[in-house]
Length: 196
Picture 1 (cartoon, one colour):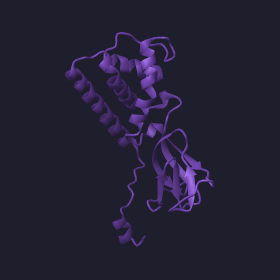
Picture 2: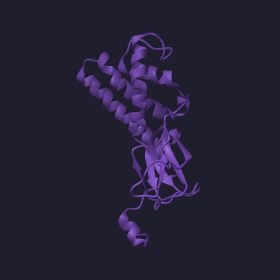
Picture 3: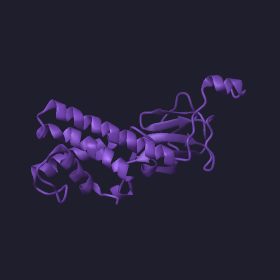
Picture 4: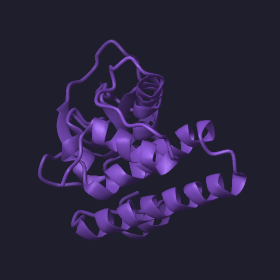
């Protein structure tokens, strides 16, 4: 069963040992205000740790002609909902490790005339996330929330370790299901293949 934003927060509250649950992030309670404060930063921290397939999307970028470039010919603004850039390529159907690019601020600079961006995005509907990823997010929220309820350092350490295990489990499941795994060649491999 996929869970929504409130479900993730309630899982986090349970893990942190909070005595209550919430019905909405907008309700007028201390617990709801803390969840609302912690939710998006914790989601973003977890999403940046892996190329999550359930939070990934691909889009074609439009060139930004007003931003000057230094090393490459073109600049493309990164979408606002982008949490982590996974890959940049010039052909919609084919990723090439020889497509060169770099991130400068919130722009991608490259010599490619057309740019397709695969990235991890902040979800609009959290029910689209894999359940193991939702659990890892709940552990992150719980760890940041827990000092309000757990005063024992050993219990906090245990919560942290459980969160790390949940994150590793989610990464492993996502990696096993991800059929599109590319590793960019090193400059040595490029030279060996005659690409440099």
